[in-house]
Picture: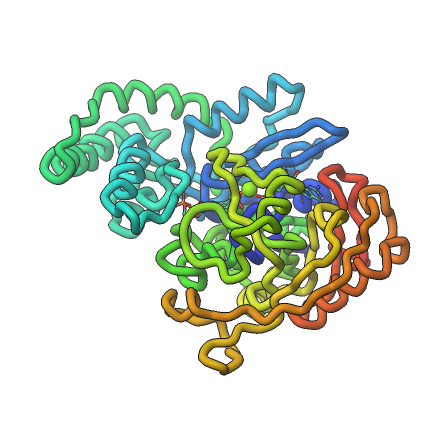
Length: 429
Ligand code: GDP
Ligand code: IMO
Ligand code: MG
């Protein structure tokens, strides 16, 4: 048995895709367990960039089974576009499996995502507008449409009519919005159903059998801890559980079958969308981080908000997900900084906090306590071993491990596979 979860520890875009792709060469199966096409995972192989939103980042490793599990909200349109793009670049997609229990993102979910954001005005969340929240709302409201319903023409036609009647009523009465055509949706989704049917199966049985047969399984988180609907900066969060516990309900693999958890930590911090961000740098440091790191969203192209590493947040992620090892990414982006700061504690009203405040009012008032590190001022992008890293980089990393109480597992110094320093041994054992 050998199962590893990869989970984001900050506000997303930590480089989960790169770490998953790197480890996928040693795995048999890679599984997405939550979120949907709000994710944007960029993977670079031999200098070529691939942008993945729904398909697991294991797709770029030959023979790896790629599973979209039941916890994902599945947008067939995005999926089929992604399949075409990937195929056109010579990648085999026959190894993809989609859960028959995953909920389907329907056209009304995207419309409601837009309308709800408009309605929130200056309280908007800054969603990716991919219909993610509304799809999870319908799942909880018991009016969702699952993949097994989509590929059953009779069931789909009936379910779609029933749900659309309700949605069109709300669109007309509440938003004064034009109705959605039932026939149009039916025709469009019938084509999707036919195309996705060969990929659909019971992924619960598949995954449990693979694990029981001793296969190596990697669970690929999307989004991250601070965007978790229970543990993040609510309401400025996504609608799913990116923490490691999300794997249990999102795949049907029981917690006792999980062996290790990796937390991906960007060496500094970014956030897309609204909500508190204690270490944000709204100054020339933030601009420099954005420019050096090309910090613009993969899905929406929005400039990412930037700031120093918040070790309090990473420590919290460690507790919540039971993180064994950190995979620190983008350390090379800090190559040219004279000094680097790390937030090691939060202070409010003269008191050091022992937790991440639940109240956003309090979180907005925290005073981050920084430690300052001397920069290494050299190009680390070709460094292959931990020992070869400059002393100042090691000091920064070792303090990060000390404050967060999480061991260093992987250090990434560039987007390519060969820009990866492995510190933890026997990751899959
Ligand atoms: P994800 O959503 O967590 O998978 O992260 P994104 O793909 O949205 O953003 C991370 C970006 O950083 C991608 O463009 C990666 O190719 C890139 N990347 C990952 N690790 C490194 C690294 O160590 N150094 C540099 N320079 N880029 C990296
Ligand atoms: P990856 O997997 C960064 C953010 C949005 C918004 C909030 C809610 O690439 O790390 P949603 O559309 O999910 O309802 O938006 O969550 N968000 C992300 N931010 N990386 C992501 O994914 C994100 N997915 C959602 O910007 O603030
Ligand atoms: Mg991303």
